[in-house]
Image 1 (cartoon, rainbow, N blue to C red):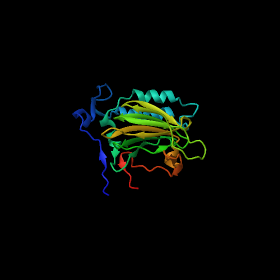
Image 2 (spheres, rainbow, N blue to C red; image 1 turned 135 degrees about the vertical axis):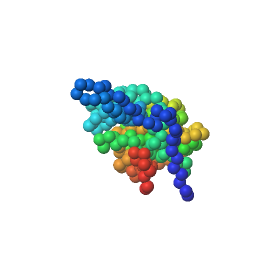
Image 3 (cartoon, helix red, strand yellow; image 1 turned 60 degrees about the horizontal axis):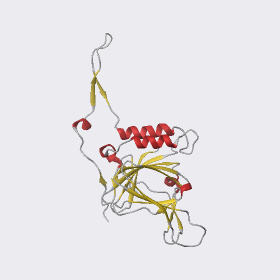
Image 4 (tube, rainbow, N blue to C red; image 1 turned 90 degrees about the horizontal axis):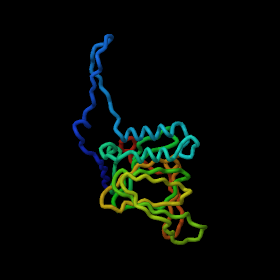
Length: 233
């Protein structure tokens, strides 16, 4: 099957297309000259702020990292599609794509996930990792479940369900149970995910059959793109 890679690229204003020039003041020691200044967009600044808070730590569970600080940083960012569209690669043959934005110090990773309309992830755990998620485009429905009790096969019961709207921020970890994310809209949805540590990328995770509760281990999750460039698996 032919795989189509789609970008959410938009042509911005003329100010978005060209760098900013500044005239430096003339002093006694140096003549007036033209200086090129490169301004970081707000999404790039968000990525930098997240990585600055994480610093050299091992992630969200570290004593020197405040989850609330990271949550507030994500909440303050108002999504602007032209700022992150370079990372938003979609494939309509897949439920969602994983697009790497930043690896930080190797103990966290930041990904843009693009969700195909009408599709969902399996019910899954997070490989003993922690996740902060921000909705960049559209809505995503999060359905949570408890871990299966024992080896007896039985349908998994819904614990809670919430629709996360654009710009909402949510936290998830194995201590809170299992979940499934779904795009129940008619257009692609996009979300930003911070995982610490990046266990799923390295070691995989477990998925669960909603009819029986049976667990299956899935090897490390593959990336669809890295730093805005398509990865050929």
